[in-house]
Amino acid sequence: QVQLVESGGGLAQAGGSLGLSCAASGRAFRAYAMAWFRQGSGKEREFVAAITWHGRVYYASSVKGRFTISRDSAKNTVYLQMNSLKPEDTAVYYCATDRRQYYSGNYYPDNEMDYWGKGTLVTVSS
Image (cartoon, rainbow, N blue to C red):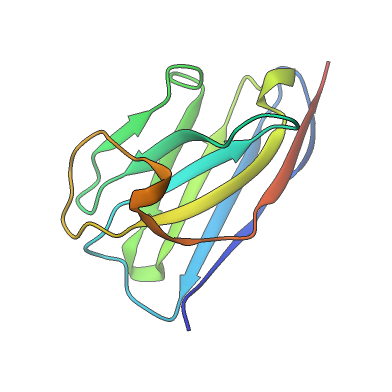
């Protein structure tokens, strides 16, 4: 059974930093991209960042330059380092795995993600 478990959410002040982790189990994801999404209260879920099977990274324009995605394929884990946080970053953050083997493009819609974590809440106070 495949499971993705996020950790590291919490409360931060504007301008501060938080780091998220997502550990996958039940299958190796070495050949697949992994991504982070978020959903703010009353908003639709949106793409945040993705990292391909060979380390190419993509970011939403709203987080580029502030967030960094990375992965440790040996540990089946993806990370999201969030710096210079803003109140509008407040959301539940989800990690997900891409169903497209060896995909290296920059398009990560929800319907191409096959496994999702349950999410971790990030709250940024002003």
